[in-house]
Length: 498
Image (cartoon, rainbow, N blue to C red; front, top):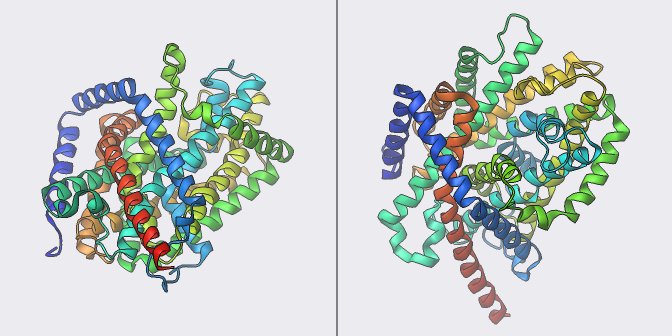
């Protein structure tokens, strides 16, 4: 613990205060966070839509720009991990539990419960449900991650800076980032990471609870006690993995995740409505690109109902991805040394987007097909939807078991990766933070998840998430400006030398 910086002590103190508040006054905590979330989504929804669209354009520019040939590292550096392992690692950290949690539930909700604009249960609602699901999990989400990861990887491996968020802002602010302002930036990043990851751990515990309740009659559904026990068991498992280091624990877990995910996906495609899945994938892909600009800037300023839908889905997702971006960005940067900017953006921006589209086409189309067959899924808890869908397919029990295993391994991988990242950020960017620091953050993450569940379940998790994301979004704007300034200067220098 001697190597930790002031960022550790300040961040852990702030998190401890927030946890104590949630534990001692859960109703007041839920009320205050709810009011803050309502204010942010109502007053700054336009801001989220604009800034995330700018991030997409920023990434696409560097993907095609001549500056994309610059390597994230020295010119002689080679990638540390194979391409397949690299994709598995960034995908496991970047989406993980969310894909399984929302794979069937989100398209079903957009179709039968709360469509964006169409009539519930209509053919238009079906098409719209897949289009908006693609939108929420596609290029925009990964562009948010890519902005943070690209900037960190460039300054850390190309320029030799510490692996800290504050280090990426030195081209704009110079040595002032070594003082209190830099500490403030890193504390915001650590706080957003801790709350964002704890939120997803809460989602994971809720869905594992739902899966176990479906598989075993004696397990109560939506049980706070069961969810806390799940978090406790997983905490022990990810700490064991964390002890083994990034090249063993996280690497092996990520590869296991991809094997389980591909197995589950292939089985759903074969056992589900195969032709419908492929047709919906093709049709939704075209509809997504056709409506991408409109969806990106859709604010519904004079339509209260549509505006509420945007706040509850699109703005929530953009805040979710932003709150996760310090964690995922730092982790992706850590495993991306040696790749060019163009190769990095191709791998981070496009491949996971394509995989997500295939995933939601399979699980979403199957869920809607089950709904249309006469089985009403709309009254179920979100975490139970996937297992109810599997219950209507051949080999449903096997599918459910694989899904619970997948959620568990995603759960462990996300928490393991997060403890590593939080350890880095509070140990001056160390590439191998001390186990004591990682374990401290592991306990902190799990405690936050338990408190947020205790204070109001999924609603409190979502509101805390949006609040944590807001201040970090301004840092991301500065990171884009700083990265462009530094890379542009280097590219001009390279051209002069030629």
